[in-house]
Image 1 (tube, helix red, strand yellow):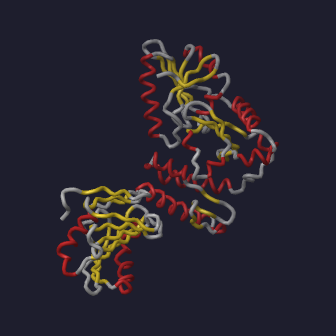
Image 2 (cartoon, helix red, strand yellow; image 1 turned 135 degrees about the horizontal axis):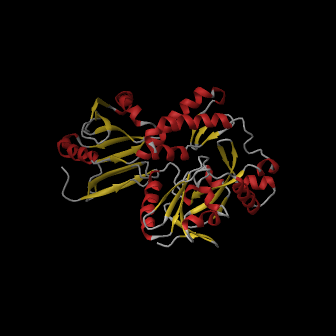
Image 3 (cartoon, helix red, strand yellow; image 1 turned 30 degrees about the horizontal axis):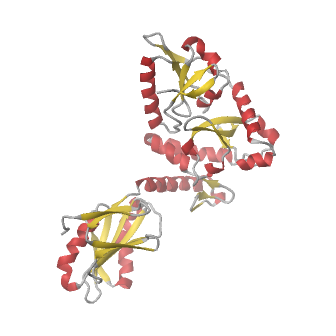
Length: 403
C-alpha cells in the first residue's frame, strides 16, 4: 500500500490529478502526453499514463471500452479484460501476458478524454507492486468536466445542423463546427446553457434556428451605407473578448471598470458583431462607428411602462426591461440622467448585471445595500452576464460607483 507521505500531481494541461509516493520519480514525455511514475531505485517497476489523441463524449464511449481494449490486446500481449471498480471513473483493466511480467493495462474514460495506463512489474513481485499501482490509480481524477459539457453540446448542435442543413456538410474541427461556407462558434452558447441548464433544449433549438435565419443575410458584405442604420452599441464584460475565439476580432472601445463597448449590426432578432475588418472595409474609423451606433441607440423607444417601487426612506428603484437585447445598452444614453433624476434624485445609481437588465435607483444607503446584493446574484446566474458593479450617474456623466 501507499506509504504515509505522498505527492500530488497535477497534469500540466489540467487533464487529471493523482497522488503518488513521495520518494518516487515522476517524468513527462511528448509535452506531458505521457507521464511516468515509479521508484527512484528501480528501472523495472513503473506506471505510464498516456493521453489518447481523441476528444470524445466519454459518457457515450464508456460501454465500448472493453471492446476497444480487447481488440488491442493481441498486439500488446494481454488478456482477461474486466471492469475496474476501484477507479473513480469508468475504466477497464487487463493482465499483461508478457513473459516475466505481472503488471496491468487500463483504459479510463472521463470528461472528454480517454487515458491508457500500463504498469511494469516483475512477475515475482506482482503481490508487492500491483496493489500500490492500483491504489495510485484509485486517486486519479480526470478534471475535464467543462470540456465534456462543451463536447456534448457540440455533438448535439452538430446533429441538429446536419439534419437542418445537409447541404453544408458540417464537420468538427479544432475551432468548432465548420460547413462548406461557414464556421459555427459555440463559446457563447456554452455559457448560456451553463447559466440556464433547465432551458438547455430551448436554448440549443433557438441557436440552431437563428443560424438558419442568418444564413441568407449578407454577413460581412454590408456596405457602409447599409450598415449605418443598423449599428448599435453593446456592453460586454472585458472577459468576453477571448483571444481563443472569434470575439478577438470584434471592434471594441474601452469604457468603465470591467466593461467594454462592442458594436453590432441588428437584423430583426439577430446581432452580427462588427469586426476590425469591417471598419477597414468601410474605410471609416472606430470613432465614427461609435458615434453612429450611439445616435441609433438614442432613436430606440423606451418602454411605455416602467416597473418601479418606492422605498421606505423615500428612495426609488426603476427596472428598465426592453425585451430587445438592448436594455443594458441604454446605460450609454446621453440623456439618462435627465430622464431619471426627477424620480430618483441626483446623482443616482445604475446596474447592468446582464444584457437584458438596466436598473436605476436612488443613491441612498438602504436601497443601495439591497439592490446591489441582487445585482451580484443576477450577475452570477445570468446567461449573458456583464458586471455586478454599480455605476454612479451624474449630470456630468457616468463613473464606477464608490463602495
